[in-house]
Image 1 (tube, rainbow, N blue to C red):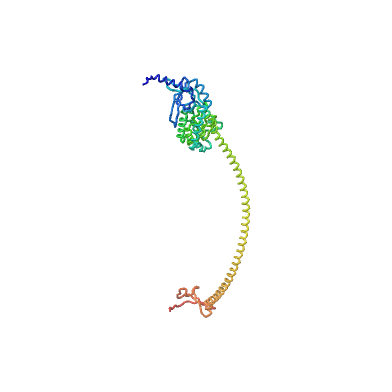
Image 2 (image 1 turned 135 degrees about the horizontal axis):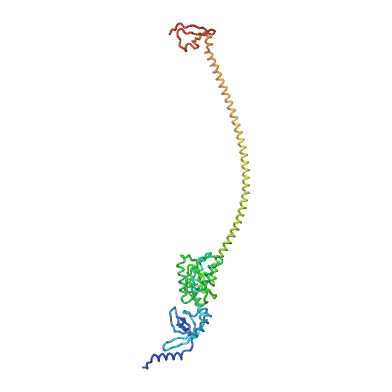
Length: 436
């Protein structure tokens, strides 16, 4: 049995092997985990290897203050972002072993070109995934209204870009009114993605109540770094599936972020977004003015056309009226002639009828006169026969008392009787009356 070693002796042997057998420096690919800077300026983290989001290996790492001061600005200038948790890097390291603190690596340098390429690869993978899932231009399907008057703003309340945006909207020289409401969120750092998604969910929950027509995500006034959150798949998916059009004005001049690609409309800066919204009002105002001018021209043209048509109709009406009047006059003349002719015919017929009636009446009258004449002769003969003179001529007498025939009055003895003959008047006294 070998002589046992103390822990320190074993630790010293491990340390000696590492120092003598391993190379002084290695280039290692890994992901920064739990990346933090101590008050003294030193940076501590773990360099990990993952597969399917599961850690396969990890080593404690140190980045001393003087080295970090040299590496960090160079890395930020090349990549546009700072070193942070979750970033995959190619680091030059030395392997250390300490009897108390154990195995660790000390970072000597970091190759920014690798991180830049890795970021581009991850960004492209995100874009490809969004494309496969049909999300890349999904938010662009919304048709914007002529003017967007009610918006939700997702930004940091203290960001200069937010202040510039609101100032440009509220103090525009045209007096256009855009109603806006801020939904605050972190715009950079490890919590930015979750903060932005949370703000979008709040907007979605209150959009109908507030009448929100679009969402504006703006960022500005800070360093052009820490934009990686806008390349994250989860944020891009949320923007793509959002039920309202989303405008981005993240305030950077480099290539578009993935958030820009999936948004409905991408503009470079917050003020550019404000100008875009105000342009909608101006365009509508100009279109209305143009429509009014066109309507005025069309109305004048239509009035001219209608006046010409009215004039033509007036001429046609006059012509038709005159023709109608002439036809009516001719019709009246013909009717008058027909009436006159009918009158003459009626008069002629009536004259013939009257002539026939006259002849008939004449015949009837002649017959009547003849009959009456004959009757008169008969009556005359009868009257003659009844004439007292005729009776007297026959030898009869007529006796009266006081001018009345004797048979028409009462008589008594002693009455004076007047008896008439044809040539004499005899006066006598009634002596005696004998009844038969």
